[in-house]
Every structure is written in C-alpha cells, then in structure tokens.
Image 1: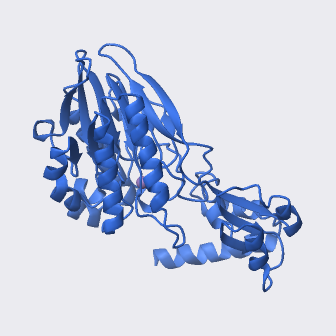
Image 2: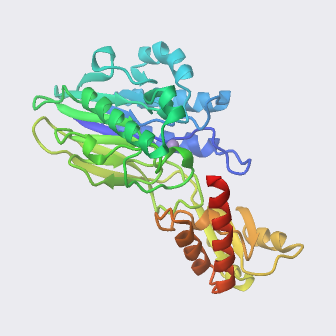
Image 3: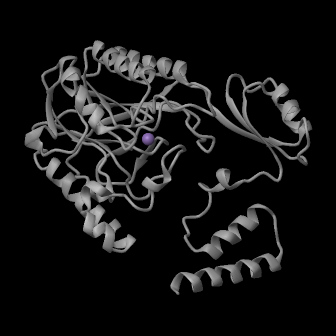
Length: 384
Ligand SMILES: [Mn+2]
C-alpha cells in the first residue's frame, strides 16, 4: 500500500495583494505528477485546502481541478477539512466529489458513518483510513463550559475529548490491514512554520502525541506549516504547506510525504522535495551589504530590512536592487513578527521582555523598571 500525504494548500492566499494562483496551480500539478510516477494507491489531503471560508471562484477552480488531477493518477483521494475550510461548503460538494473518487470529511463522524474508510490497494492490500477533520473548541466543548471555565480547564477538556475521538476512530485498527489516520490538529510540542492562525495553534487547542495508537502505520497531519515528525509511539508527521506562506517560514524545502506500508510491518516514510513554489525569505543588512546580494535571490519573495535610518526614497532604492521585495523596512524595524517564533515558550512577561531587550541589544535598567511598574499597574487593575 502506497500513500501520498499533502495538505495546508491554502489556495487563495495572497501575499500583500500579489496572487499566488500560478504557484498553486504549478505546485499542485507537481504533487499530482508525483502521485502518478509513484503509482500511489491513496492520496491524503490533510485540510486547509482553501485559505478562506468563502473562497473565490478562481480558488475553487484550482482546488477542484487539483483533486481531479490527483484521481487521474489512479489513486483514491481522501480529504479532511481544516480550520480554514468551510465545512458546509465542502458538505455541499461532497456527493459530486464522491463521483470523482474523492472522499471528503468536512465534519468528524463515527467510524460507522464514514469516519473510517476502507481502501484496497492495487496489489490487494487492505487499509483502514481514519478521517479526523478539524475539531473546533466550540464543537467539542459545550457552550456553558466555554462561558464558565478557566482557559486551562478548557484546554484540558479539549485534549481529553479529542483524545477520545481519536480512540474511537482508531478502535478498529488491527494486524490485518494498513492503519492510517489523517487529521487536521495540533500535537503538543509542534513547531509553527508561518501563516497559521495563532489563536488556533499552540496554546489552546492541542492533543497529546500519546493519543495516537502504536498500531497506526502512519498518522498524517495538517495544521502546522513546517514539515516535521512528532515524537510519538507511532510515526506522526506533518507534511507542511506546499508553498512558503510566511516570512518566518525558514524551511529549505517544501515537501510531499510518500509512505509505503503493509499489514504487520513498519511503514517506510520519505519526504519528497517540491520545486514549484517561490521561496519567502527575509534579508537584512546595510545598503552596502544588501547591494552584494542584488541579483542572487532569483524569484524569491523578499522581506528586506535595511539597517539605516528611515528616509524618503530608501524603499525605492531597495526595490530597484530587489524587484521581488514585498516588504521593505528601515531599522530599527519592528522585529516582533520575525522573532516571535524564536523566543522561548515562556509566558512570563518579564522573561519575554528581557529576551526582547537582549535581541535588540538594549541594556537599560530604567526600561526594566518602567516595564515592572506598568506590569504591576496592569495586574492591579485586572484584579480590581
Ligand atoms: Mn493551515
């Protein structure tokens, strides 16, 4: 049984108003070609096909065309909805997609209602594929609990209930088949790439890696845009997005996962680099330093930080050097966007502020004192 795992397409996403439709067409064609040359039995799409809950007709055309191209490789295609997708829109087209050999699960359902699909490979091997679309906190935690409970209790409730959903979807996994889970969710400890909605990632909504049974040959996930393997009792992988979606996203390659598995044995898993997308890169330096890079960045989209005082015309000078510059900032630029991912996981405001000052090479005790005083005032007024 050979499977291909992709997801987080985010079709329809633009970059400061620049269309990425051509890139999306190209990279999804590349994925479909890979499905053909690898002769995969199943293509798994792990959610966030669309960037928006109300996609443009152009975005819909790209996604549906891509799904059909994937089926033309001879594979069955299974899809779960992500948090960016509109489950009702996908429900509306579910019967049509089924005609084209595409199974879509916009909402979580029990194994008996289609939450687990059984597929036989070209070689006659059976697979069970459990389908877990995005579970919003609203879906899984009742309204009265949302109103009354503390954030950490809600997070526990979510984790426990999502764990039970996974347990019930995978309860039929056994030694006689290839067992796979396809889901859109956050596993504790995952690294964000870029472009995820932060309110729906690390802190509020996550499941433990131990929620996945070790009998699973492969757990293919969407939601985090950085390809990564999670430490767990089963092989748990995020395939990441096929296009670079954010300047904080420093992956060298974007990838598609290829998985080969047979009942009773471990899966063979590899990441195949994708070539079609345009990289998003952040550059910084003085004008003289940047000048040495001009002409070396190909068609990469750039965020350029110039270490010079802001002045009229500076941005034009930079854009002449780098026609693909999307953002141009003069120092001291607001570095919050760049450094947020790299700061520690600490939620202690003093520690975070300390790290921020260190990043900016600021060593002024008066600033720390002022920060402490403001923090005290904030706490005092919050508890009043
Ligand atoms: Mn996503």
